[in-house]
Image (cartoon, rainbow, N blue to C red; front, top):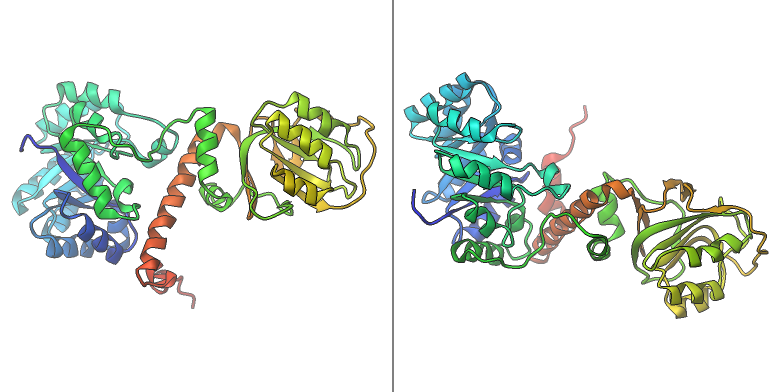
Length: 431
């Protein structure tokens, strides 16, 4: 292999037409083009065949993730045009051996993927003895979403690796130089290119980061501090967050009192009775700056919040208020500018009786909410993210947003949404 690091474009997509279009935009900057596992499962060997026909000067990688029938699957991929075929390192030795034999027969090479392998360094040595050509240090997408990083593990494996090592899993222009520096000679990049609005520019940026061994700022899956979570959740929409949670997490019946409010912060919970505004007001003093007050009034229709409470919360630095009940003084609150979401807006308030409690588990909009959970609200509504899932959901929400940005760009270029998504092709056939 050349001393120059190789940039491999991973096309982990559903539709072959979209994959080819992206590869066409990125081709000037990439060396290898991979038919990703989702693409192969969706389009079969035709994905490999079409990529080889369209990009004959590129090395075509078939990410078969073979676990059994090593010879048979390698032969299929190689005959379709694959130059490199990926076999799982967790498979039996005989599977790798059979894949190697078939690859030699049809002029291809074998890459052993170490995803799910505990002793990665040991498996690289075994793969070498079995005849493999490359090994791939692979951090899976679900691990990426939890903010895991593999650079140090990669460095340990690379220090003793006898095979050229590829690195895959959340790499982009910020992290690819570290991966190369840690010993990878092949950088496998997927979403940082395929989700970009400008694919060519994204690929060029990553190519520059690799060749110059420098960090180029971008977005990537990471572990967030509390302030970074606020920033991440503020950038995405509540629908993005709900999509990231498998279309869940939405409060029902809770809406902003005026268009344009946007909030993100940790919940400080309050339970009270219809019309009793004592605990909601006391919670302003107990909550921390940046918190969102989430108030459970069990859908009561007498206001427990108004203009004066809003002024107090605004000066304290409260990020927003959510009420499963009623608020009043909507016009004044809109002018103050503190995001407020409630089930009802009414003119009548109750009295401060002091019933209820603070910091307890409550229900709001039909969902359980605990202190410390993340609350994201905008014109579409309010979503709740459990605090122990916040990093993963923030990463997934950013991922959803980036996918939508790419679709939006394709629509701007003249395609309709149904054509971009190939809806007719993937509709379920009934009868």
